[in-house]
Image 1 (cartoon, one colour):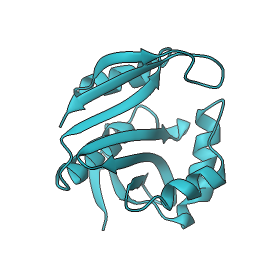
Image 2: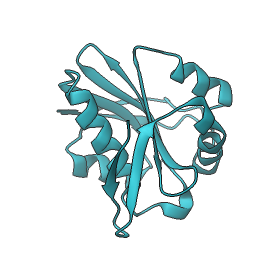
Image 3: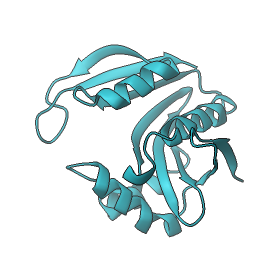
Length: 156
């Protein structure tokens, strides 16, 4: 079952559970977004991590324009991946995906959410802060290129 949100551009974006049919587009967005992108195999493994995986795509028209991947472990939501197609960045797609994910998992009993974000990713850090996440610490050399990750979390 899908839900949706109104983007900053005034357009309606739909949010649906990710399926294998979405993966070609998701992998394309991943490659456009990251220097060390996840592979098709990694996305398939995440989708198959039931009952832990919570994977959503956002779309307006044909195909995904963004996605979020997470695990729900007991009462903690751990966001593992989030990306938006560069052509629609700044329109509220990431915020809509995370807000939908939090709303859905809160109804499943989640009370806490956590994630890692590149220290240099100021746009993502601002997004997470605006959603209520705070910096809890860091993971030195977390990313393949040696960059540190900030660990952020929030009560839901």
